Image 1: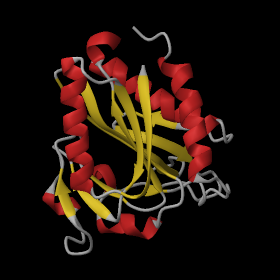
Image 2: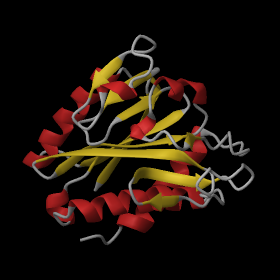
Image 3: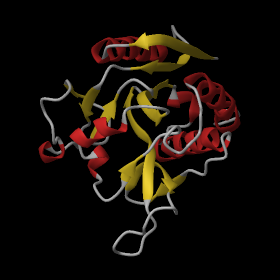
Length: 218
């Protein structure tokens, strides 16, 4: 059984990490169910295990937290749905690559509920959307923007951290970092794409897509 938890308001980052660490230990010990936690954070930057100091463009703008998740710098803030994923890979197959692919497929399936086509790109972590209305890049590639970030950590084969989907955050806040170390492409949101979608709409889509992608997984 997966426990779905939704927390209203803005959750401080350190409080979220403390909750996840405790829940992961309990899941590993067999004393708690797996959990999907849907929250929002106040404006902040996090530095993953591969973060480069030069990618923090505005170190004094928002609080910066060192995170033990994979990946580089990312932004969290109001209007962004953060999805913390605490799942037991001991029961779901100890295959990290396959698990990350499931997370990607989950986001793509949720976006499809709103007729948005998400893409995975080699060498660029996260989920991307094409922007054919914009000029192509100098090398001829189509313009694309990132709509969702993925970064996880495992402890005793139980996952934590997870996914962030841009619903209606202040996109200018991303300018204080090089998001995930990628400077050639931009960042977008569901509302920026012209879709009047609420956080509740996204939560419903995530729940439905989770059942599609993870139900029956080994």
